[in-house]
Image (cartoon, rainbow, N blue to C red; front, side, top):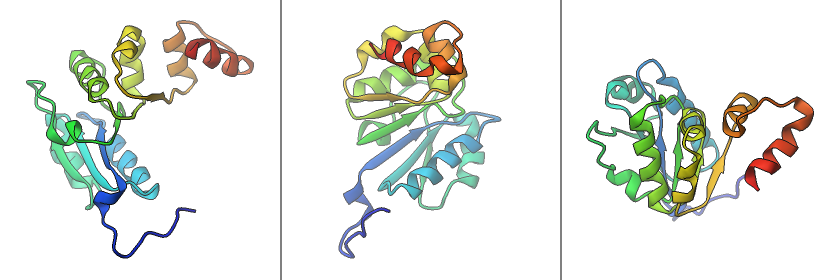
Length: 167
């Protein structure tokens, strides 16, 4: 379904995706995210994970993905600063470091997708959305949406709950 690419093109022609994901015990999440990104035609693909997950993620990641760790000191990695799109959250964990990462991603200004643990962390600090300098897409499942809106809702209310939240 994707258009055929020119034989003269290279991965840099198709964006720089940074996937900020994974932590100890949750190393499959960034790998699955990278595989999905490849299937969708992402260009230069980087996975940035927590230091304690680096070895496991690097061992499982697609060979085309560059894997690095976000330092515990919180310095924003260059691949995140230079990204043209960022995914943050899958398997990342929910703690103060995740909040620092979210703030850093929102400050970049490129399009971002917030998923999984990123949504759980965001639900406790919805004011962070005001800091986003670029467009942000949230991808909650019903449980994550419950945390975001602060109440349970039935399956027949999904659309109205999403509309009320975005308003």
